[in-house]
Length: 251
Image 1 (tube, rainbow, N blue to C red):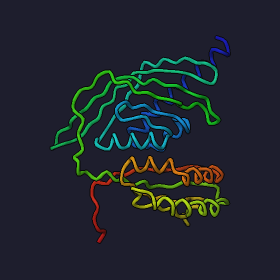
Image 2: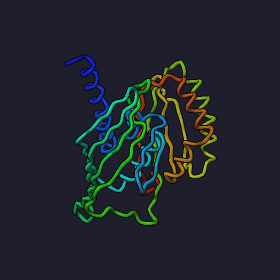
Image 3: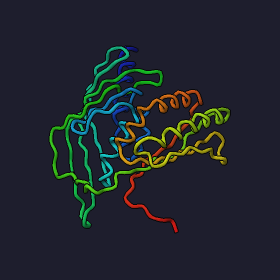
């Protein structure tokens, strides 16, 4: 077995691992992990749901689609990979189960099909540059959210940066907060310094709908803030989305 063959096998396994990491992110609702799956400008074509660009928009689309279910399990198999330098293409089978409990009974909606992927080697390693979902068959009936359902959701968590850069990033965050609060559909937007953990920035957002959040990602002030965040030396992050089904007073 030549060194080239070994290297090829290792790259193929790395690409397969990307497709598996995607399923864990979805089923455990860790949509922020999609930053380690998709390229910053990566796209996902989900058929009737639409085409989404960037890990945040892709994660938002998945979060909205899966919010109707209590549990999900995405299984991928039968991988085929074709390498071409710093590019690659691949395909794999998909079978996804979506379970929702209604009236004490589990209802299961099954979707089977395939993912068609284009991969690109980046400075951070291999990432999915484009993914397309192709549905072959379904079984069961997906639930339909009532028209009056509250579509708002909360984004909450933290980002860890180099402590020396906290003041500079927070100055940029103040500009970001003021501009974001003027956006349609922004119900709350706040960044704050965690005084108990050096370099940790706490984040709290509430948005009226997925469309409003997607619009937020395309604003000029979001572009400027991303640049500031890139200079801040991000060391880690933990951001989650929580869908709102009831709102009431604390006391």
